[in-house]
Image 1 (cartoon, rainbow, N blue to C red):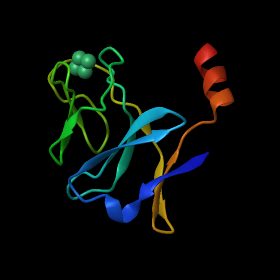
Image 2: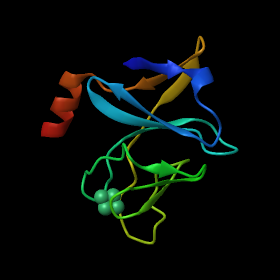
Image 3: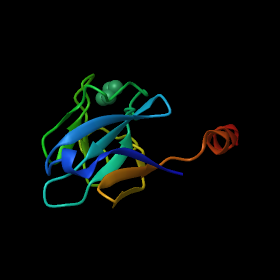
Length: 113
Ligand code: FES
């Protein structure tokens, strides 16, 4: 289900914003020269929050151990071997940015499998 998370005009190329959906945090990043992307604000290293992460227009940098994740894919590019930051579908429509987050019941069912 898509959730409207912010006005499209509030995001600038090369920047990152933190938004909340259902009391959880998400990163909206716009990599330079690419399209906006949405990621769950959890570091794949140990599920620590990425709310205080930085973004240089290319990579998301975790505030805890400075691992770097590609803004265009979420892939780990720090030299460490790790999973990517979890990406979710994003669309821009009617002047807003929308993120497709699985409904809570579906997420719980998937998590229990
Ligand atoms: S918690 Fe993110 S790099 Fe360690």
